[in-house]
Image (cartoon, rainbow, N blue to C red; front, side):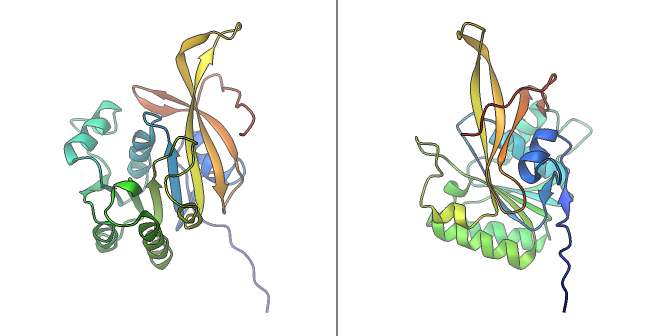
Length: 226
């Protein structure tokens, strides 16, 4: 008997740096039915990026363990995702229970579940990561889970956390410098793919402004992958 591997369906966000971080230049976009980690330092733009993603997927759900409805909607309004005539294209849930978040996502049949963040839910982080992995594969639902980093830029907790996910994407921030090496008051951001079972690793430049995420114009030169 012969088997033919079919391409994994992907959803494209429309920002080149984001799509290629999840899928590479040849198969850009987030592979559906996968569990993905998103990390980065405080202020890197993780939650802002998360709002862009849930607003792109049909029937997405944003489950927050750290912010209120008002805080999430306020950020969505500041970056233009929500306006007086346009609502956020996702269900919102605030909870400290990972089981509650998974059950609610099952009930509404979400195509994307955004968890912000893993370390804010009650219980052991490793156990919650395992629950997310099993739920993702059983329901064939795409998951994006924000995680915290420790001082050496690794995911807070054991290595088992990263093992339970199909990809690990980190947003890095580097201060720009002039020709003499002096620091400038501007910063460059990069999507660094540290692990990906459905695409290559690497890094891609991004621009974050008051209006949200976009590709740099002209494109920034990405430094060597760390």
